[in-house]
Image 1 (tube, rainbow, N blue to C red):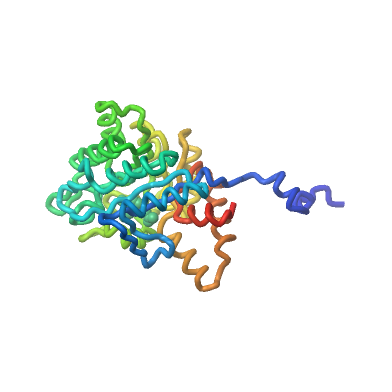
Image 2: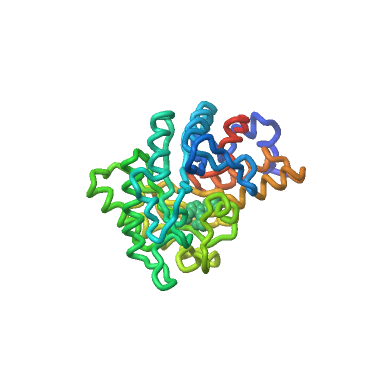
Length: 322
Ligand code: PBG
């Protein structure tokens, strides 16, 4: 005689829904956007079907339209017209992200605006920090990163999200924000960011591939898991309000570990390569896109993510997939 029959709770949709352990809500999702100079610009990104580089006017329309369907949060990446060795456009008061934030706040004031704080899109060499003699210099980079975060906050960003992986940048940002009257702006730190081939399509989108070498002297080695806890704790100690794990899919063990190591909210980034693979497989008729996307996002949340940055956010909201 079988006493335990787990199938009893799987018999009907009503029963399954009643006992489901994980629910994904559109409220947890954050939609990334790439904003560039010009007006009326909309350039499709080859490797990321459905995602475009857009000028500020089109961005404001997209954000407003997505918001009407239920996308309440976005993260912004800027593509400047000029790059240099000091990433001047990253912290310019009239830089591309700063202007975009002001315009979104005017057009769609109900949207939570997160800005990616990094130098790679603004540096002529494409690295996330200052380069001297072929070396990425940590502390000088933190100064520029803190300046960039401040300029985003001053433009109206609700949350600043440093993605550079320099040591001590969360502390540098917190100090700078506080000294300039921005003690209420939260920091979402890309605390646990691995050097990953999954960022390939993003670098095409943002034109931010490094011109020499790679990012392994600052982004994490994917062989390491204990180190994720160290990075997450360090950032929380420095003042991070939310920590991120990136990428997400091949790193669900890391999401879980970080969830258990710290008590702040954990965000996971379902990155460009993960999106591209799903889109390519769906376009080839190999998988059912809706089912795959919901399964992936549920798994990320089940692993412990409170928030998920995903390029699927718009499709999910518009098509009412949840
Ligand atoms: C910038 C940055 C990157 C991503 C987010 N911020 C690229 C990188 O580190 O090379 C990747 C996002 C994605 O792949 O979707 N430092």
